[in-house]
Length: 411
Image 1 (tube, helix red, strand yellow):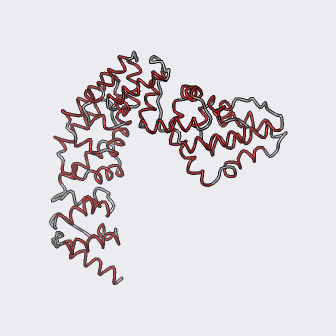
Image 2: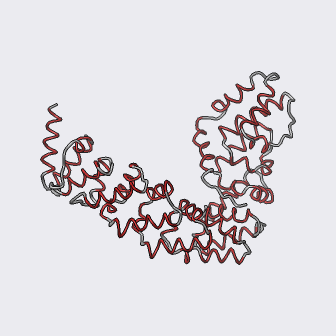
Image 3: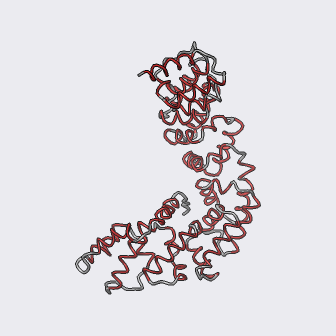
């Protein structure tokens, strides 16, 4: 009780004192971090010094934590609540949640001093006019509120006009925006324009260029020399410029440096694959190159052991490298191995087909169907998820989930 009264008295003294005094600033920060609720429980008005009012406002009105409020207060000083209140109301009226507003202010506290009518509202209205609205807009801006500092006429509008000339719809513009908010921060005509010309010169149709800009704007922002190098390599490997995989290959290769690419290729060769086997696998599934070398090795060891396959045989099934080791490959291979050993299914079963089918279909075809022959098969399937994979491999298994974040859908 005594400590609480002492802390409250000290805080009240600090609130009415010049916080620029180093010793008092340090004491203020220390007390606040020790007891975050102490400031929010203390009444602070705009007639008190700017530092204490700013921190109080950031906590009580914006929803920042005491730590974030202290950090943000180093970048902004509020003298009254009128302008920041109007900024917060604008965000609320456009559907931003309290959490999103707090995230925006924590990242860009100076937005609280921006003019609602001259700076913020015109940008939000423009985003709405091109179809970027609701949860999509609030999610994007809370992740990258720096966009609200960008010039509407000199950066945002030209970027939208450029995108619209290729992707045509507001929905596609919103998708491109979500994929990479930098599209509204750059001169796209200078950044993307040369790469679009390269694709056109190679005979890539406009619809596929549009898909690439929409789904993977980051790829189109590569420096033209590097972009041309990737396109040339894709052609040398035998990819047809008119095929859908040509665009996918460019996306995959753009995600790694030349050195990393060479290391990945060497990693597949270390499995005993020939140059033709590697090219065949890459053409069947370009995204296999995104998989780490460690996971590739583990998949080869696991499938080779369970299904009695040579490493080179997996060049025919590159989709396998994109699947979860723990939740799919290990339990299914264990079940298939038991069924093969008991002569219930053929040994030349298509591995890709069995591993890629839905959970429902796999249970029906390979577990439920053979429960009378092998009563413990359900236990094998369920138990191997934890029994077969070593603990040090659990983290690696998360990689397959990360791969789902990289998607290119080009019909």
